[in-house]
Image (cartoon, rainbow, N blue to C red; front, side):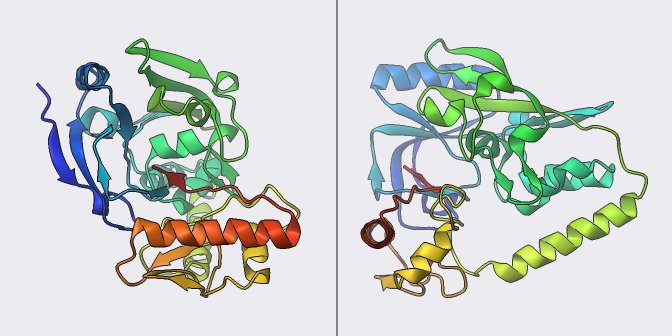
Length: 292
């Protein structure tokens, strides 16, 4: 039997706005997921997977319509066999990237730069501008279909990947990522040189990013002629605050919870940004952060 409890989930999102749920469960194996899915159906609840919460905003302070779950144990796996690797949904992306780089597999440098878990990264087709994204070397994804309560495996093509998007995101309440398999290619000869190169990229990224509680980029960038931060800057939102939340002085596409911000504060900033940019540039900004 799984334990379903009430829980303060504020710290399950890196922006750390106040949030509490009536229904929460840790999931350790596939039978637990089948059981919790049945429970959610009987209670007319939506299943909501939470990984490390690095790209998530809880838009409400109290939830009673969702059953929040975190995948653990069986889903926190990393299996490298020959020149392919299967990574569990709960496995940290940076940790996976580090292991692959240490083996000389250069195509996974982007994983070392992105916070969060493999499951969230697959769902969003996470990546970086220069280093690559999830779909580049992906062979297949194991999913749990909540409609049939069965496990399915889909190919790269069937996952319908596009910029910061996938089938899992499009079919929002249907699929849960269990694991993904990637082709590694051939390792490079100069592994030490590769490791040094990745460390430099990590250092450069740290220097560019703001400090503080945040979910990272607020809006998708590669949808318009210029990056989202440019438009936010042009409409005067750099360092603009509402309540305890503000657009960062260092990177105006990042919202920082600097003083006990509420979800309402953050949503007000998002709304203000979309309205100003639309009025001045006739551009519709699209959230990269997942609004729950």
